[in-house]
Amino acid sequence: MAKDVRQLDEIDERIVAALRRQGRLANNALASSVGIAESTCLSRVRSLVDRGVIAGFHAEVDPAWLGRPIQAMIAVRLKGDARDAINEFSDRLAAMPEVLNVFFLAGADDFHVHVAARDPDDLRSFVVDHLSSASEVALTETNLIFEHKRGRLAE
Image (cartoon, rainbow, N blue to C red; front, top):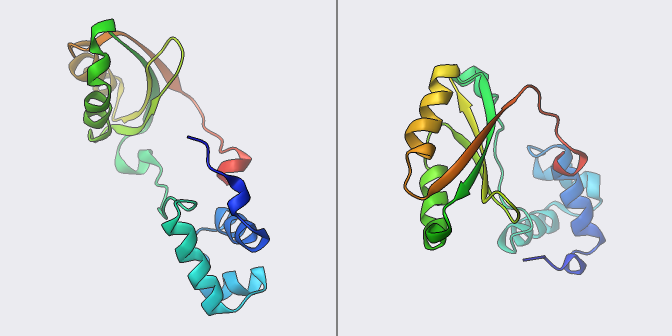
């Protein structure tokens, strides 16, 4: 569902832009960069979080440092009679330690699953044990990720 971007005024937009550039910016530095009082800045950030504009704050960790240097994007198509299991299937995937992201799609594929594995055998086991053997799954296609660059919107 599309969000109504008109709900953000110029100050909110500047706060969001500053936090996208540097999510760990302290409130006093954020307030100063936006040109508002610290108390106003804090209440505006809380409002942005409450309204869902800011979905969260997190540290992005390179999976290689966690012993999972191989990343792949796996396309998954469900069987036609498995449509009622979409939410349960995606929740089950998202809970697995190998899974970084689950994307529910329109188009030929139902999901793209972004995973990080220890080695090729670990990746193969994930696909065979958790995807290909699942009763809901009709087809998988695994693509290795050689490199990832963050787009401007995600900065």
